[in-house]
Length: 468
Image 1 (tube, rainbow, N blue to C red):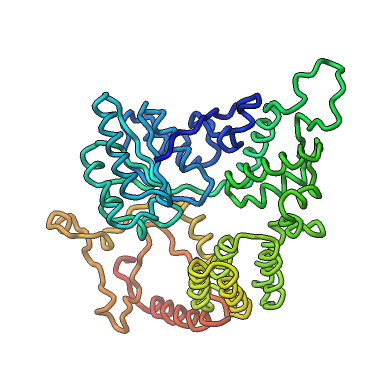
Image 2 (image 1 turned 90 degrees about the vertical axis):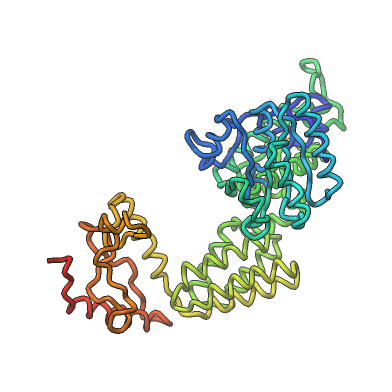
């Protein structure tokens, strides 16, 4: 088990004692309102906010990438319900730690206090270890909160998963990272450094580090881009850079200084003035433009500069969906397999799979027809609201529903000529039948276009009794 470290909320501790506490810990929020990000869960009336305000904790699993607040939310849950907080790391712990946690929870219950048991990286526990929690969750000995970066549907036992609600946490947006950055800089300034407290006009010593460190706009942009949605990564980088600056008696951090403080990774991302997201844009546009050589160049530029290959894998999957689509459905399969290969092999071996996917996508037939159709459909739904499902399309598993006319007149396509119910209508009554998906004349979509045109011609000839 892990003891709770000292916390200071958004107001960083001052003095030499506070300076020894990591910046990420000093900035750990004390209240929900201090949490940056996760507005889809923590905004007014949103699910996790409601859970906090309910007065009764329930078991839950936080699923999301690193550095987005999973541990913070678990601790805030313990504070909200005045519960004893126990943290276990599945990377370092095992059955022994689980037994110890159970014993502590029993002591707390005897004293009339709730316990919240937080298990970080819960997917690292095997089935037997996860099963060990079940009887105590069911008995209410403790409220279980698990944190995982992996899909809990595959990595958490079904029995445990059924007893917990899953909350999906999102990476921090660029705006949220900037907000966190600004809060961190204020916290660094509030921390006493050598030389603070001098009498007015007193000359600092020659070897004295500056009390406050200023970051220019370029440094802020590069650091927040490099963090890639990970708040903890951003705070750790800020602290490393600030410590390096103080060690060299600098009071200002610019883009050039980041080269020295962070092993030149950021320099490679921004060589010649290019920003991190400019490079991923160049990679995406090279793939879209069917240039395999330029695509490989930008992939290698980013890998050489220290980009997270998992981030690149996610973007490659996005390219397969957005720019290749159904013109070559194999592209998505290959992109997903490349991401899986990297997870199995890591760097540098797994990077070859990413390169293979990039080259395939660049050479594949291109279509954004599905991407555009999805955007049109979303806009259409937002405009037309929630029209009721037509009676002939409704489910009718009971006699009552059948008696109410659910499913009446439905035409089973497999029983129709060619397996197609020509003239049948599947949109809500009174809603026009728009055409969202418009296949292009490339790749497999040539055949898809021909098929859809043939089906629509059959519709035009058919007589639909519901149109009478």
